[in-house]
Image 1 (spheres, rainbow, N blue to C red):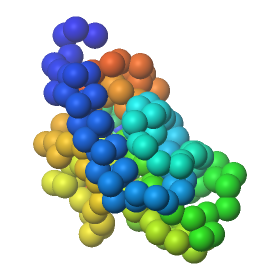
Image 2: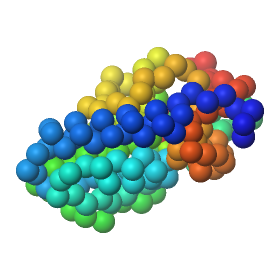
Image 3: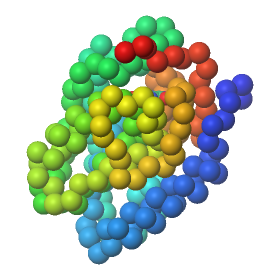
Length: 186
Ligand code: IMP
Ligand code: MG
């Protein structure tokens, strides 16, 4: 894996995750909080984040997939999350009246987050906010932003720290650039 260029080292990620945890702790002080991680990419970010948040908290997971792109690239060297999003695993907790922080690995076109936000707001949480580790604003198709952003990154395909390419590379401790993976012109 050493040939893949490091975009964010494990040390940079750890430092930023600690900052996000401090911010969330300050913003939600005294509240009970339910973190909801989006499978599978956000699992590692969520586990690092929740262990540093000093709140009465618990967590759950939700799973989504895009039609036409269930497990990574649709065509070789092209990734695409333009498909319709569908739920593959619902949350187990009721979100009604809860303070919910949705935790996602990366905000790209915004389709996934828009779908999840609409779905989860339908549960009528008391408070709802979104934390993403990475944000690629240049790829946005829908006007949606996160309340907490770890890093804003350029339009490159990245892997590691939970992020995959066709299920590979999730366990890399640093975030690396996978070259030659281009976004479709849509
Ligand atoms: P969106 O619906 O286009 O915002 O896409 C969000 C999802 O696309 C993320 O949860 C990832 O699964 C995937 N994704 C987008 N960009 C990347 C990337 O650079 N590396 C790995 N997965 C990505
Ligand atoms: Mg994902």
